[in-house]
Image 1 (cartoon, one colour):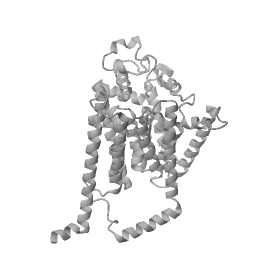
Image 2 (cartoon, one colour):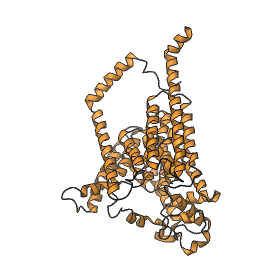
Image 3 (tube, rainbow, N blue to C red):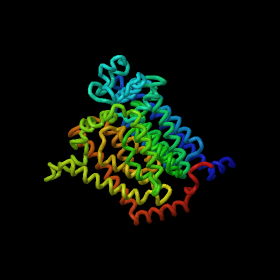
Image 4 (tube, helix red, strand yellow):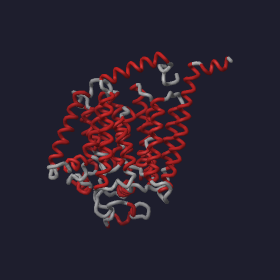
Length: 469
């Protein structure tokens, strides 16, 4: 009878909930692991198909997020999360990437540098590089006969360092896994400092988009995201030089993080932007002997991907389908989107220092708006939103990322009318959930929810801490 009373006591019920959370995460992790294995098998022969696998993983991820956001956790929970996160990526380590061939260019650029040649000097198919051709890397390089490398100097330093150890795809994937470990370490430290439950790192670590695009394809975005996470951590600690160095390195790996500068910049603080500028100048100086070729295939890529013609931008395409706007010029879109972005940057400048966390919200808003305005066509381009999502869970962004992940594994992921339909579904869902969030946060509902929470707390043990001491 005494055992039964103890079992029904509040302390035992809390412990039971801790282990229910851990058990649920363990089962969901095993299921995610199984579908990750099926993904690698699908590279060689049809098993379920990419869209079926992505749908299953998205559902499992959604369930896992629900468990970690609402369940009670203890000291074992974070270990379970990180162990499975590593396992997901290790399964993808040895199989050759199928969904993207970018990683072969990474290895090639490193090989070229070790031969004493500037990687921006020649296209891979140039006869000057004939002696480097092999059967493993060279045949798989995309745009090898006409495109100089597009990757900035910081990326080239990484390629050089990795290929100094091993000029292989597996070594490059291991390097990207290492950057993800740095990223998760920075996220956990930032969460701890901000009083955010560390277990929220699951929102990053188990995101299936990252398993596919970083774990399997080995995209360089892992390095950029790691440095962005470090920049956020240093900004929270009020270390301007370190913040500028980390952000500058992120810019030197993937150019787009420069948009975060206004959110991370403290007023009357010149050392942070000076550090960014110094890193960028030194980076390009290292490879400047080739002149303007140091910018690589950037211009050609902008033309090829429809960045100059406007074919890339969903919002412009949507506007052109409205009555009387079929001839809307692209410069009008650039002006309007630029005004929107400048307005957001001005709002950021005035709000990023209101509290110790305001800069994070501002950076997240800038990054998300940037993606919505310029509508990327590849899933790995939106991956940099995921660390922000782990720090600030947001329903519209969650919808955007999961919708992007799933839809781009379907037959709709083809430029043209199909991709326009894909974006109509994606943007429609995002704006619908944004409207739901606005209504939910209306003063009347907020007041009503507060009264319900108060009543709930006084009628149960729900006010007990979520974490085991």
